[in-house]
Structure formats: C-alpha cells, structure tokens
Image (cartoon, rainbow, N blue to C red; front, side, top):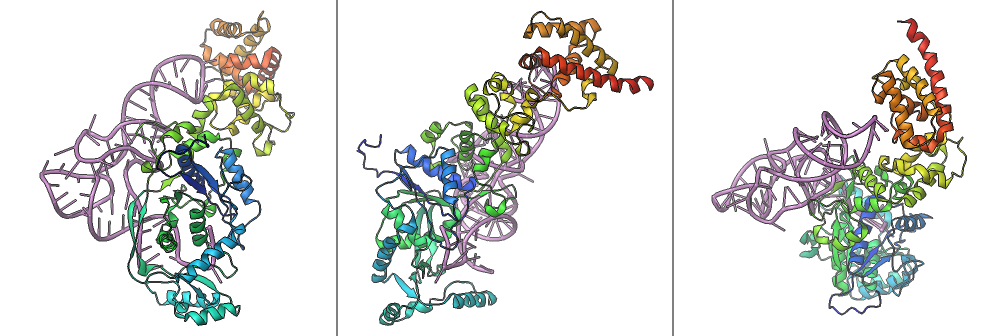
Length: 511
RNA sequence: GGCGCAUUCGUCUAGUGGUUAGGACGCUGCCCUUUCAAGGCAGAGAUCACGGGUUCGAGCCCCGUAUGCGCUACCA
C-alpha cells in the first residue's frame, strides 16, 4: 500500500500524536489521538509519534512506555516514531536541540525574535503588580524588546542568560482558519511576546511543535481547544518562517461527570485502566469516536474499519462532551456479545485469575484456571457481562463448592418453607434416579416434581437454582447443572436441604 | 480582571429556514421466559440557555445577556 505512488495533487495526509512525558494520558486525550489516526488511515497517509520532552523539570520516567502501551492496546499503530524509525527523525524533541537552535538563529536574524534578559524574579513581580492593579492585559512588558541590537548581541556574547521572545506585531489582526470553526480573528494587541527558546537552550512547546510539524511535513494538526488562545502565536510563527500552516482543528475538551475538563486532577484515568476494568479496545474506540463525532442520526456501532471509512473532520463537534461511563458499559456489552467463544475465553481468563482482592475468583480457587473447563460454560454468561471484570462474580459457583447464601433464598415467593423443602427433597431423589443426565431429562424430572406437588414449576426451579448456585440470578438452570455435573449438584442440594431443615423448625413452631 | 470557545431530552447526539424536533444510553411498564440477562414493544423525558432582531416563517441567520468551560508560565 505504502509504495503506491500518489498520483493525485493532494498532499499526503500526515498526522501526529505529540505527547509530553509529564503525565499519563487520559481517555479524552486519546480521543484526539484516535481522530488523528483515523484521518491518516482514511487517506492512506502516515501517523507519527513524536515525543515533546522539552520540559526538563517536569518530564517523568516511564510515561512514554505507558503511552505506547495504551496505543498498542487500542491498536493505534504509528508509522514513524521512536523505535519505529522514519526519515524525519529524531522523534524525541530533546534530540533535536540543534535543529531548534538553527531555526531560532534564522528567525533572530530576520528580527522576528529578540533576546530577553529579564530574570524570573522580575517577571514574577511584574505579574504580581499587574494583577494588583487589575490591568487589562497581563504578560510580559516587552522591556527587552527595545535593547539596541549591538548591545543585545554583546550581552549574549558575554554569556548573560537570556531567552528568545517572539516579536508580536503591536497592532493588527491575525486571521486563521480552524478546520472546525472556520475563520478566526485574533487581535494582536492582546498577544504577548512569548518565549520561543528557554535559557537552558530548550525550545518551548510553541516553537518546537511549529518547527517539527513543518519539518515532519505534518498536514493536519488536531489538538485540544485549550490551545486555541495560542493559535495566533503559531500562525505568526509560520508566517515569519514563510511556511504553510497545516490544516488545524481544535477539538473540544472532554469533560468528566462533574462538568470539568478531564485531566489528571479531575479523576481522569489513564486509558489502560479501561483495559484493567475489562473493556474491549474496539468498544472503547467506538465509544470514543462518538464522543464529539456522529455519522448520522441512527448509526452507533462502528468497527474500526467502518470508522476509518466514514470519519470526517467536517462532522466533528465544537462543543464539549461529558464522559458517560454508563454508555461505555452498554457499548462494551454489545461488543462482548459479538466476540467468538475463543476470544471470550481468552479475555475472561486473566480476569478470573486475578487475586480475589483485585476482583478475581476467590483465592481458594486454584490457579491456573482450566481453560477447557472455562470454555465449556463461559458462553452462558456472554450476554450477561458488561465488562470482563464481571466474570468472577458471574462464574463464581462454577469454581466454588462452599456456597455462601441465606437459606431464605431457597424459598421462592410463590411457595412456603415447607413446600420449598419438600420440593428440594423430591427434586433430589428424582435427579438421583435419572437414567440420563441431560437437559431434557433434568427439566422433565423437575417439572414432574412441580406437577406432583401441584405447584408451578417456577418455585421448584428457583429452589434448585439457589441450592446449586447460591444465587437467584444465573444462566439457564439446565445448562448450568449440566456443566456442574450430577455429583456436584446433588451434593449442593443436600447442603441446601440441611439448611432449610434448620430454619424449618422455628417456622413451624410459630404456626 | 482580560481574552477565547461553547450552549437541542439527565447523558451522547440527528438536525443546516417550513419536522408531530429523530435515534441511542439510562429510567418506567408490558411481552418473551425456570431466574437474571439479552431481545421485542410501549412510555415518561427538550417551551432547542434567555432576550431582541432578520424573515411570510427560525433549533437553524444576526446582535446582546446569562451560564459553563478553557487560556492568561523560561508547562505542555
């Protein structure tokens, strides 16, 4: 595919995911990544991973690996990036310092940027004073903007620490196109002379991302709309360099239930926790796609391939969406019902084997769990699962013999305690005498008990159900009993009969 | 404080000047049924944030207001 020549005049679509290793990425951030990826795949272009590690103080270890793990889980493969190679590397910005220095020098020479020697202390007191006076425009006061060129050059040569600031036009309007909102106008007078190159020689995000997006031939930039205020800054930078601005879309934020922007501080969790909670990557992706994008008024379930085919920037929203966890649950259930028995088994297994404290089966159940045994019944719970994390609870009685339940559960609403006991005893003996242990034989036997007692089948089934599983809600009874086998069923019924006999005594004396 | 973005059922959304404002999640009820799910059907739920215009006609266009969110660092 990739060596098919591009005959059309349209430039190749290249999008990127440019995370900074300052914290784990949450699900809202991954939506932006997913849209970028979809765009690249839809147009047969490339998706690039670039690491924006330009903040020496805040970069954290291990974050990048987590990020890549998250991408892998969702199968959002990238064509270029760390470990993947590519002709536009290096893909760590910290490895590109020379490149930024080169372009900074170029733009300094053109006079679009100037050295600023102000100390952080001065900037801090400046800010405080501006705030105190309630000034309309806060920000740098451009003190160093008017230092004579010669003097500035001398001080730089003398080794005085400095940053490079962008020389924003004092008047005029910067007009830019946002792919979602159309034309946007920004009043230059409100912009400040932002730092492009820090005193440690590292670029700021603004400078590095513009330089890299251009050098890496990025055609479409998708980012959160918290970047909207700095859009003119970037636009100006592009024009100073004489470069073409990529198609830029500012996506609305994803909010939590509390209506606040999803972030590390607002309960937003890294994507991988959804893996740990038993969500399917395709369901997560489908849900994410619909958070801010819709194909039409009806369609909801989209495979990744369908999303690639149908996704378009034009139908992306500009208004923020809340993250609705309940809806994700529903959608995950839809996907679980669609997978094969093999997939189901493989997905459920690790969740059952987790320690009890982490939601797995009771620690008394021996690990590893027998795959074939699991495979023999897990389909019974397929339509009952919202997430794979539900599996341990749902399948508990297939693994545990000592069932813990209130004996009262054995007595269905439509029968009294004596009747329940009698039904269980009769059921037990009927099942004991069964020639064949199969679905129809068991059902016939139990219905026979009901007929003989002249009661409905329901209460009889319920008594046996609770005796055998300890639950009132289970998969179909016959299928369940078949899996458990006659021995286990009869033993559990014996236990149930004993329990019923115990509570039977006071019940009779009160009458 | 300044600047910006946004605003259709509780939630995700369809809608691009004329619709009984549609769908989905969730909720309620009924059906199916050995329970629970799943499935089917039905229902409640939106004076389209508010106020002005433009127009024969506005959820859709324009202007205000309100509310929410965001930005306002040598962080991204």
